[in-house]
Image (cartoon, rainbow over all chains, first blue to last red; front, side, top):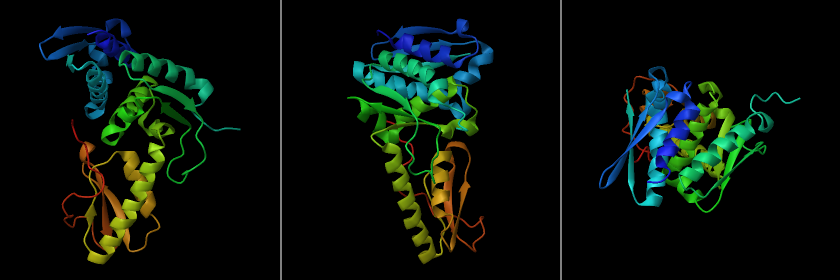
Length: 79
Length: 185
């Protein structure tokens, strides 16, 4: 779905120290689109945040964008 | 003359650029404006910068205790690499949400203090962010007969009001109060 992969990429690249190692894969299901985010191992903490707050903030934004597109998006952060 | 750490000229363009890009991707029709704060409620909050949003989707930002507004604020703090103790210096707002929330917290604190004085029982607020807990503590600092503390860890940390003479380990009443806590859609 246009733009959501890029949304996660843009946010992740702004947060990490090594933006070249940010990649997002989009996996389309029937109801849900899964966005798989990969970053450099040293940047994992930057995209997760203390008590998962940063990951939760990205998910909140995806939730709002999803409402507009009538589609559910979930974020998976891959190690 | 300004002792400000964060200024419009220093970080304004960076904030606007970051937000404009992700808001467009997320199809949210709101526009951010980075500005110096108006001098009001400085007892409770005294930020360097306010990022104020306008536009047709402002209501979406404020749903669920401003969940989306605060998510954008958090991502912006992280994007700027701000240390946690600086987070209160750059605050996000829309439709005067912050001012109304401060007033709501202040009134809740005073109402809860009256209750504690009348019942001699501790009162526990629902969990809140450090910034909101601070507002409750400040609202109670000159209130005689009660004292306030934060208890619990991480996302469960919340303010407890005690009768001034009661020790902290007294079992607090079950959670209740005006903050509805964190809800998921």
